[in-house]
Amino acid sequence: MKLPFAESFKIKMVESIRRSTREEREQWLKEANYNLFSLKSDHVFIDLLTDSGTGAMSDKQWSAMMLGDESYAGARSYFNMKSALKNILGFDYFLPTHQGRAAENVLFSVLIKEGHVVPGNSHFDTTKGHIEFRKAKAIDCTIDEAKETELEHPFKGNLDLTKLEAVLSTYPKEQIPMIIVTVTCNTSGGQPVSMENMKAVRALADKYGIPVCYDSARFAENAYFIKTREDGYADKTIKEIVLEMYSYADMATMSSKKDAIVNMGGFIAMKDQELWNQASTFNIMYEGYVTYGGMSGRDMNALAQGLDEGTEFDYLETRIKQVEYLGSKLEEYGIPFQKPVGGHAIFVDARKILPHIPKEEFQAQTLGCELYLEAGIRGVEIGAILADRDPETRENRYPELELLRLALPRRTYTNNHMDVIAAALKNVYDRRDEIKNGYKIVEEAPIMRHFTVKLDRI
Ligand SMILES: *Cc1c(COP(=O)(O)O)cnc(C)c1O
Image 1 (cartoon, rainbow, N blue to C red):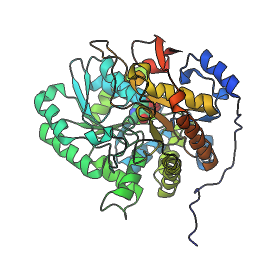
Image 2 (spheres, rainbow, N blue to C red):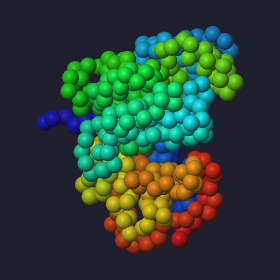
Image 3 (tube, rainbow, N blue to C red):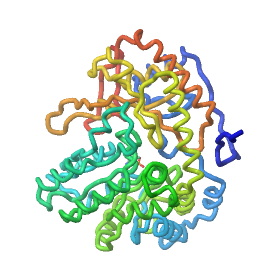
């Protein structure tokens, strides 16, 4: 008999979670103004809001924390992080920051100015926020296949080279500070970018003289997909693949709360010393001195260890197989979701489930609230609320996809939890026709409104 798959870890420490009643959840959701971000985590049974900073660190990471050097300047922990970045990603220069958006803030302070355009593949919300805040424009060049959720394509994170070249040839070089390649592409469903596509982007970037920046939060998951899906990479290690990926980049921003499996941290990495010099000034102003940025020594140590563990095949296989397991359950129940499954999450197609709810009533948000009411499971809307208003016209932007993202924290839940998630979603799916109305916005912030928006039932 072929042995079944099992996790490549055992559990050393646990945290209790509590179920609740539907009446309790009705009350709590109302108090949260139907914004899942506003719920207390104690009121959530299975928390799939994000995989960011919510993973379980290993025994080796915890022991690395104990060895953290908290010296203000030149700490050992800084040099541990420096050698991890050199060995694993191949960068000579870096600045620690407190998380990914801080890396964007510092780097973009140097490079992005009013009137610039920044082409990329479905820019992440904070990335887009930092671009638009500087009165520059993010131009989405993701392949069209990414918008068809049922279509199987191995690399839905790819940039459409025709769209990219159209941008590069339309605007003068001085107006394009960088091309952003998001690996994996969070917004389009945790979908990977192929090595072939990264090489082609590099070639176009060289042709037009534009630097390439990788938004790197899930770079290791991207490497796993290259190994398992792209010709010629099956026999390479994840670490070899990662080094090749970054050989085509000039710089990177990183949210270490994802693939470096820490609860807090980030960095900017670059190959150019002059850029490092310029970014250092902003890092010192916004984050902290260059050898700690926004991080404590113990956190830099845990990050260095996490980068190493996060780029091991066994760890990645365990992680991605859990996402696939949840996907296979949903498939069995006929629930539509973005295929193939992404690296860190399942993206349920809310528009297909609730086609009778108008997009102005926020289909994905409606599905998210229903799933919470059903079983205390918290997902997150990736739809019109997140898409925000157009910065110029102030009109609501309605994206082509209305998705409910179920993000899986790393090494945190078991497959029994996956069974509960799938069953709860099936119950909602079975009663979808009884869900008659969506939500309306009663209060919102001028930018990145999804975090604090207040909603009411229609
Ligand atoms: C999470 C994330 C960011 C922002 O990082 P934070 O650590 O949340 O600030 C940027 N880009 C991508 C692709 C991400 O997933």
